[in-house]
Length: 241
Image (cartoon, rainbow, N blue to C red):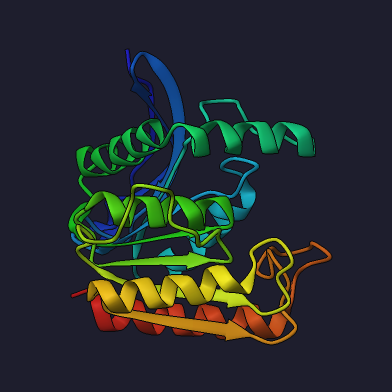
């Protein structure tokens, strides 16, 4: 039986939910979501390469405080939250090598959000690092979201893929001091989106390295984090009803 851990507050019609377990092909996955109301606009969030941790939950809470529902999807599986770099890399690379599985898990998470009564027809997707790369994969797949917003994700387009089926605009936040994702990927993506006719914004931050939004890390840059978050919230206001 699918285990769902819900905490519902009936006062003022508010709905709050925390960890939720669901299954994909018989395997358990554990996401996290909160919603101020059943019809609140939705932000669909994909985690970094260490799985769905307190970092993504904090972002969900921040979005909830702004009046948005937010669902953080799990692409690794329940209980799989790697802490060693080699394990983080292994989990991320496994999905980079199996793009069909990545897409299946992304769609399964969005389906689960819909099952929980969240408004997936009025939604924006976002993600951090590995999650940013994943949300671009979702964009290329033709997912029915209004915008796709990667923070410091890998930006290259895999061989054989393109953005011809992308339904929403793409807004990219990237640090020009990023040594992991070459600036050429940023430039190439801008050219590709323009030539494909996808509405987009490509925003860079000087002095910001890879993972510049990750609180508490040596890569964190408060200025770039705050500026990108402020623009992100503006995008949400502009895009969602």
